Image 1: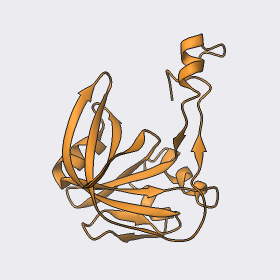
Image 2 (image 1 turned 30 degrees about the vertical axis):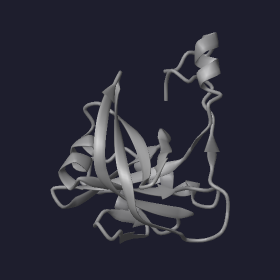
Image 3 (image 1 turned 90 degrees about the vertical axis):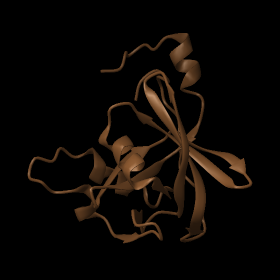
Length: 160
Protein backbone atom coordinates (compact mmCIF):
# COMPACT_ATOMS: atom_id res chain seq x y z
CA UNK A 1 0.00 0.00 0.00
CA UNK A 2 1.49 3.39 -0.94
CA UNK A 3 2.60 5.68 1.84
CA UNK A 4 -0.11 8.25 2.59
CA UNK A 5 2.64 10.86 2.99
CA UNK A 6 5.15 10.33 0.18
CA UNK A 7 8.65 11.71 0.53
CA UNK A 8 9.64 14.94 -1.25
CA UNK A 9 11.48 12.84 -3.87
CA UNK A 10 8.44 10.62 -4.44
CA UNK A 11 6.19 13.68 -4.80
CA UNK A 12 8.63 15.32 -7.25
CA UNK A 13 8.81 12.17 -9.39
CA UNK A 14 5.03 12.01 -9.33
CA UNK A 15 4.92 15.33 -11.17
CA UNK A 16 6.50 13.78 -14.28
CA UNK A 17 3.49 13.32 -16.58
CA UNK A 18 2.94 10.19 -18.60
CA UNK A 19 0.22 8.89 -20.86
CA UNK A 20 -2.03 5.90 -20.38
CA UNK A 21 -1.62 2.99 -22.76
CA UNK A 22 -2.53 -0.63 -23.25
CA UNK A 23 0.55 -2.54 -24.37
CA UNK A 24 -0.09 -5.87 -26.08
CA UNK A 25 1.88 -8.74 -27.52
CA UNK A 26 1.48 -12.47 -28.11
CA UNK A 27 2.73 -15.26 -25.84
CA UNK A 28 2.56 -18.71 -27.41
CA UNK A 29 0.07 -17.26 -29.91
CA UNK A 30 -2.28 -15.90 -27.22
CA UNK A 31 -2.80 -12.18 -26.61
CA UNK A 32 -1.37 -10.68 -23.44
CA UNK A 33 -1.42 -7.08 -22.35
CA UNK A 34 -1.10 -4.60 -19.54
CA UNK A 35 -1.87 -1.00 -18.72
CA UNK A 36 1.35 0.93 -19.17
CA UNK A 37 2.30 4.47 -18.38
CA UNK A 38 6.06 4.26 -18.83
CA UNK A 39 5.94 4.81 -22.62
CA UNK A 40 7.78 7.51 -24.55
CA UNK A 41 8.90 8.39 -28.07
CA UNK A 42 12.68 8.14 -28.24
CA UNK A 43 13.53 8.63 -31.92
CA UNK A 44 12.32 10.15 -35.19
CA UNK A 45 14.17 8.31 -37.96
CA UNK A 46 13.29 5.55 -37.65
CA UNK A 47 10.36 6.41 -35.39
CA UNK A 48 11.07 4.67 -32.10
CA UNK A 49 9.22 4.39 -28.81
CA UNK A 50 10.11 2.67 -25.58
CA UNK A 51 8.06 0.94 -22.94
CA UNK A 52 9.31 -0.01 -19.47
CA UNK A 53 8.14 -3.35 -18.09
CA UNK A 54 8.68 -4.64 -14.56
CA UNK A 55 11.23 -7.44 -14.48
CA UNK A 56 9.78 -10.92 -14.21
CA UNK A 57 6.45 -10.18 -15.89
CA UNK A 58 5.12 -12.52 -18.58
CA UNK A 59 4.61 -9.47 -20.78
CA UNK A 60 8.37 -9.10 -21.15
CA UNK A 61 8.65 -12.75 -22.19
CA UNK A 62 5.85 -12.17 -24.74
CA UNK A 63 7.57 -9.14 -26.26
CA UNK A 64 10.82 -11.10 -26.56
CA UNK A 65 9.03 -14.11 -28.08
CA UNK A 66 6.96 -11.99 -30.51
CA UNK A 67 9.89 -9.62 -31.16
CA UNK A 68 7.45 -6.76 -30.93
CA UNK A 69 4.52 -5.08 -29.26
CA UNK A 70 1.54 -2.84 -29.93
CA UNK A 71 0.71 0.31 -27.98
CA UNK A 72 -2.91 1.47 -27.90
CA UNK A 73 -3.01 5.13 -26.84
CA UNK A 74 -5.86 5.90 -24.45
CA UNK A 75 -7.84 9.11 -24.11
CA UNK A 76 -10.63 10.07 -21.68
CA UNK A 77 -13.17 8.36 -23.98
CA UNK A 78 -11.29 5.03 -23.95
CA UNK A 79 -9.86 4.94 -20.42
CA UNK A 80 -12.57 2.49 -19.40
CA UNK A 81 -10.71 -0.20 -21.35
CA UNK A 82 -8.11 -0.27 -18.57
CA UNK A 83 -10.61 -1.86 -16.18
CA UNK A 84 -10.42 -5.20 -18.00
CA UNK A 85 -6.74 -5.48 -17.01
CA UNK A 86 -7.26 -4.74 -13.31
CA UNK A 87 -9.72 -7.59 -12.60
CA UNK A 88 -8.65 -10.76 -10.80
CA UNK A 89 -9.16 -13.71 -13.11
CA UNK A 90 -9.32 -17.25 -11.84
CA UNK A 91 -11.65 -18.72 -14.45
CA UNK A 92 -9.21 -18.70 -17.37
CA UNK A 93 -10.84 -15.67 -18.99
CA UNK A 94 -8.80 -12.89 -20.55
CA UNK A 95 -9.07 -9.10 -20.46
CA UNK A 96 -9.47 -9.33 -24.22
CA UNK A 97 -12.81 -11.13 -23.74
CA UNK A 98 -14.22 -7.76 -22.60
CA UNK A 99 -12.66 -5.55 -25.27
CA UNK A 100 -13.18 -4.87 -28.93
CA UNK A 101 -9.87 -5.66 -30.63
CA UNK A 102 -8.43 -6.35 -34.04
CA UNK A 103 -4.98 -7.60 -35.00
CA UNK A 104 -2.19 -5.17 -35.82
CA UNK A 105 -0.19 -5.95 -38.97
CA UNK A 106 2.31 -7.89 -36.83
CA UNK A 107 -0.43 -9.81 -34.98
CA UNK A 108 -0.93 -8.48 -31.41
CA UNK A 109 -4.28 -6.89 -30.63
CA UNK A 110 -5.15 -3.24 -31.13
CA UNK A 111 -7.81 -1.93 -28.73
CA UNK A 112 -10.29 -0.54 -31.26
CA UNK A 113 -11.80 2.03 -28.85
CA UNK A 114 -8.33 3.59 -28.29
CA UNK A 115 -7.41 7.00 -29.66
CA UNK A 116 -4.47 5.67 -31.69
CA UNK A 117 -2.19 2.66 -32.04
CA UNK A 118 1.45 1.92 -32.85
CA UNK A 119 2.80 -1.44 -34.04
CA UNK A 120 6.44 -1.85 -33.04
CA UNK A 121 9.26 -4.25 -33.87
CA UNK A 122 11.56 -4.88 -30.91
CA UNK A 123 14.86 -3.14 -31.69
CA UNK A 124 16.66 -3.48 -28.35
CA UNK A 125 16.19 -3.57 -24.62
CA UNK A 126 17.99 -2.21 -21.60
CA UNK A 127 17.69 -3.45 -18.02
CA UNK A 128 17.57 -0.70 -15.42
CA UNK A 129 16.61 -1.07 -11.76
CA UNK A 130 13.37 -3.00 -11.41
CA UNK A 131 12.31 -2.57 -15.07
CA UNK A 132 13.47 -3.51 -18.55
CA UNK A 133 13.06 -0.81 -21.18
CA UNK A 134 12.09 -2.23 -24.58
CA UNK A 135 12.75 -0.03 -27.59
CA UNK A 136 10.52 -0.61 -30.59
CA UNK A 137 10.79 0.75 -34.11
CA UNK A 138 7.30 1.83 -35.14
CA UNK A 139 6.37 0.00 -38.33
CA UNK A 140 2.68 0.95 -38.54
CA UNK A 141 0.15 3.06 -36.71
CA UNK A 142 -2.95 5.17 -37.04
CA UNK A 143 -5.22 7.62 -35.24
CA UNK A 144 -8.66 6.08 -34.83
CA UNK A 145 -10.29 9.44 -34.16
CA UNK A 146 -9.38 13.01 -33.31
CA UNK A 147 -8.65 13.96 -29.71
CA UNK A 148 -6.01 14.32 -27.05
CA UNK A 149 -4.43 11.47 -25.08
CA UNK A 150 -4.96 10.99 -21.37
CA UNK A 151 -2.21 12.34 -19.14
CA UNK A 152 -1.43 10.64 -15.84
CA UNK A 153 0.30 12.00 -12.71
CA UNK A 154 1.21 9.96 -9.66
CA UNK A 155 0.93 11.20 -6.08
CA UNK A 156 3.95 9.01 -5.32
CA UNK A 157 6.49 8.60 -8.12
CA UNK A 158 8.18 5.70 -6.32
CA UNK A 159 5.21 3.32 -6.59
CA UNK A 160 2.36 2.46 -8.90
